[in-house]
Length: 210
Length: 210
DNA sequence: ACCTGAACACCGTTCAAGT
DNA sequence: ACCTGAACACCGTTCAAGT
Image (tube, rainbow over all chains, first blue to last red):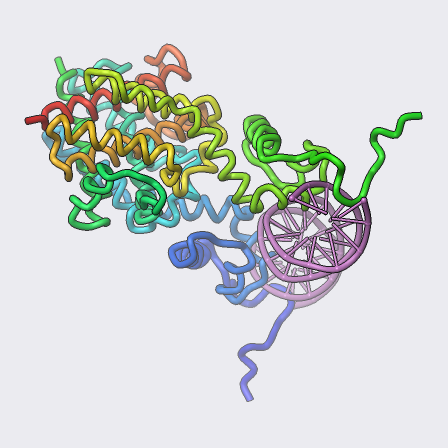
């Protein structure tokens, strides 16, 4: 009789856990339930909670793992395209799309989002591009920050699309309701808004070229 | 000998707690420490944790109290100004300023922000204004959502201003660093970015008038 | 109605004990 | 090095007991 489910103590001959497996499970868990706990994560991995601490530094470490997963999906190669508006549009679309694939993860990443080297390097390339375009340094930073804030905000919008703009029974808002029903679908609203805002930010940038 | 600190059991002759006091303490606590727990909140109020449940529905209820506090500061009267760009700029500046006064509260409010009747009524007025201006209903919703997302994202930026754009030692980002130092101050960066983005969103809106 | 105090389930983190 | 199991402090929530 095989005893494959036998509980063992001590170091296993072959490591059963690694950061990749933890990241997979955490991402799946948040995608499904909107949040995660270390015990639930460990349960899914068939492991004790304390085992996780050999690979990540606690709950914050798992969040960091999630952040890596998401930012890795950003296609920074878009920045090599020309002309510049195609490059920038491509970058920020890809940025938001990375979040859009895992909307329920976004609320976990809202504090301190930009420290990932990947993103900083990409933003450095943007800064270089803007300088090359003749945008003054100070305005470059305003543009970059505005795009970042807008992208994060738009990603958050994806996390709770329906409830975000639901009008309660007791609130009188006929004009807003009319504008809402003018949208063909709820999913489209967030996309339209993002494209609208991104185009606006870029259009204003082009007026500051010299 | 006066025994004013005497512990008592049962209903006190005069209620010691109310939603206003809880809201005050919670706001102060989050402003100082960036988060709150019910035990800590109760300790500050000189009361047992379970007492809070007679006035708010648990932790979520306290968050709702915080949300009310913040949104109540929004000066929706700005919408009565004319011309339209003054009205809209005034509204969204006030919106963001309300968050800016309590930046550390923002991360607690990122999920489901717009259900507050105050804000919905204001947005209804905006929708009416846009219709009056001749903006197509579908584009109105895109504009409104974009402004909302941008404002939330900009408010989040205020919650962690320094660390947000800090470049680690091992990351090479000279162009970004140059753009960063071109800012006169860190506090200014977030303000500049907000003004830049808001102006961009409004400028693009004006091109869609008929 | 409003506050207390005890109780409960649950979570994040640490650490000695095992291989 | 890597996993277990027990332990600890802490949190959110409930509820009977008191006035």
